[in-house]
Image (cartoon, rainbow, N blue to C red; front, side, top):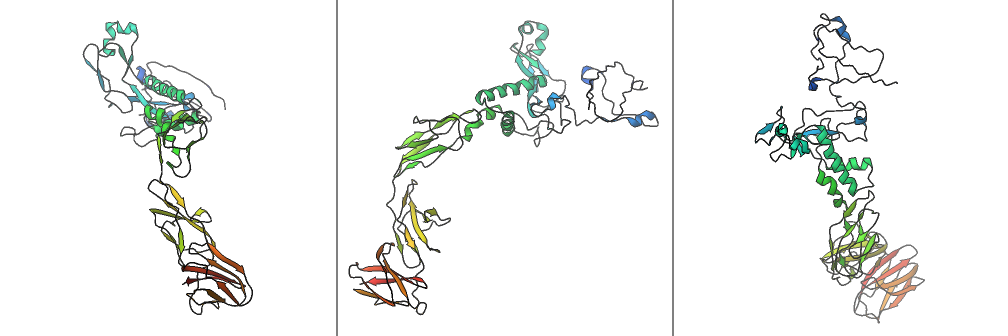
Length: 446
């Protein structure tokens, strides 16, 4: 489809007899601006009836929602700025208060601020900034000319200016500060940070909208918010080994306070640690400091087994493991196994140092109820010899209360005798394997 640029200017148009008409044929769209702000004609919205003027049947009322229509301004890669009233009044160099012709409240959107959306449906404007009733450095010829006194502030060095012509440079300057800090940023990354740090208030209403875009610009948060993204992770108490610290996001370069330039820092002794570097957008960012202390590891815990439940020696906190993997929710002093595996426990003190037990190899639960098994052990308690009886015996193993194997032998037949005279007095377990099953019994050495 071809694009055409047609400009027409009519002065003193007679809006009663309608001597002038703009007609189109075919399909397409065109843009039309009012000249009211320049003292010219406005767009007519109160039109005659068809009876009064038959050609009015073809009149198309303007789409007042699409009021920001310049082609370059509608691009998603262009930051369009809404104009906010900066102040309600100011004291001029004559000592008089200057008030704007309209009564827009400071902080509200100026009446002259254009609104979207764009023809392609892109939200416009993108952001809002102060522009209307702004005071900025005045040219020297203005400062020395008394005729400009109402336009100058009380000090005579700052001049009133208005509109998006003031609001847009505010955003451009803030963008320059952002890119100075984050030079590798793309337009999408800048927009994400710009919109993410913008704020809303009673004047903006719910954002985003086609009056203020994503809200009012927040220069401070936009420039410094990257700092909040860098955090130091890792243990902060030195226990048995030095701790390794690392960052939560990848950096192009790393500068640790201990001189390390690696992705992680090894801290062998108590220290106060911080990190800075450049992220993937090129932003120079800093972490908060992390204090690494010297911990006090607890004694390694021990596990006892009563035939059903594993019990850790006493400690402030517990975490049980199955085959060296933590068991979710297993944080009590006791744990009941449900499957054959190696079980261990870690205890943790107030400084987060962990101590680990030896692994306990759990096979099956103890079965001692009369009539439950055809296996028998006797006498129990015993002083010297423990007799094992059952069909198709294949292996007999004696275990300490902590799971240590004290006797392990492959056997055959229906009976086996175990000499326990070398064992100290106390509770033990005997693991009996047959062709059909594995069972564990407890016995007492007298």
